Length: 133
Image 1 (cartoon, rainbow, N blue to C red):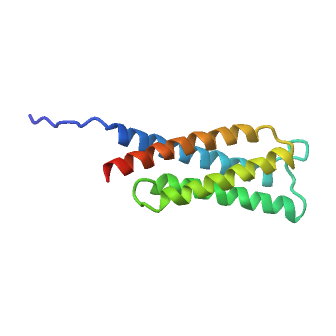
Image 2 (tube, rainbow, N blue to C red):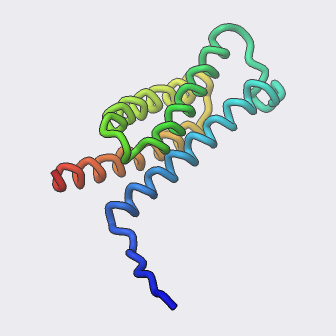
């Protein structure tokens, strides 16, 4: 019988994996919500987009969701992801502000809070990366 030593995840790996999971979930929720409101929700539910403005917001949300999903896969594997993701998060904060003001959706505050948590996690990852270098 052989034994295999199992290495516990280090704090850096746990932080990285947790951030990746949060990014993946955030991107999936955003993508599902966008698809639902663009194609399935009734007018009473806030769906049924009309005009170029509504479809542009839908495309904007889809692009952000895909960026979060890609970042979830690439984070920790490519050094360029961290600064690009910081920009995507700032754009998502602007997107949420548009949803809050123009569409009167208070749920956007929750998305802003998640953006803030992810920004804090990315700051921790960047700090650990600088220490390791």
